[in-house]
Length: 366
Ligand SMILES: *Cc1c(COP(=O)(O)O)cnc(C)c1O
Image (cartoon, rainbow, N blue to C red; front, side, top):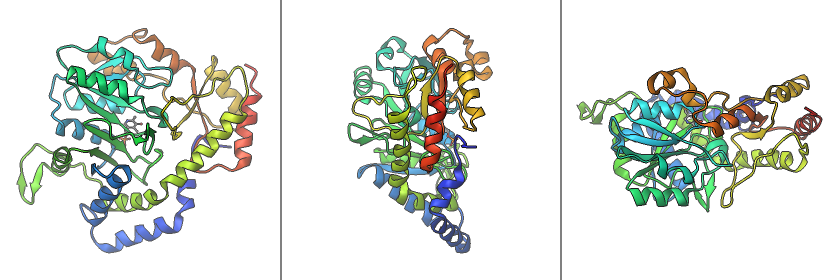
């Protein structure tokens, strides 16, 4: 069986280094808010840009919640998001008291700037872009619209670590950006983890207060904070992974480039990369008319597939009940959800495995 993903492969590539770091942290006797976290925050920010800051938090959802909160988003504010985004993004927005307002995506699955202005109301405070599947959204037109209407701009980079748009990494285009280090992500740890990144040090300082019971210094609490810290063990392991992330992304690109060059089937539409972007392949998403039939065909050949995601966030019961959404509200998104299939993509695949996926896809007749 070729799985859709196998997390042990990434671990095995740098096993000794991870184990050495894990033992070092375990033996240090210091497990929360220590030198691994502060070193990770510094190194991660530096890897993105010379002029940004990072606060490590416990997961991507809380990065969104704390980051929006620290950026001044208030209950009742409307935030424009794409209808084909991930539920966790919407939960972060809603837990902040804000209201997600959906717009349809573009041909690259990213938030379509052409749809933003029609969604702006007097309550709109921000646009929150999710760079989906490992490729950046085309940010320039979105930045222009935000500037024109005085809106804040946020980025959900849970799937787009080190994915550049016109030479700048995602996470550096707006007021603040939110990262997940969940194990399946391109830059994932060995448990839950997340981070907020901003060029505005005050936002990052507020996130650091909010993640630690609202405490700005010891035994002094200035906000109704949370317990949302990134622990020392995860921070230490992420520091190890950070040294190798460029190689890991190159491995993914090798797999993707072989798929792109060798998959040749009129029934299967390959992903395209927008101008100015370098895809980092969190997901390799193809499109087929018969989603189930295609997946069944590959399953018979012992090739794992997935759908990211079958049900768009606004059709989840939690959102339908709250906002009254119904099927048909965002037809383009629903069409995408009904036709996308993710092929195996992970930190390492052998050439034989890549061959088998390509043969499996090419032998599909529909
Ligand atoms: C994974 C993911 C999240 C949530 O991250 P967690 O660390 O799992 O909480 C948020 N947004 C997007 C786009 C994601 O892919």
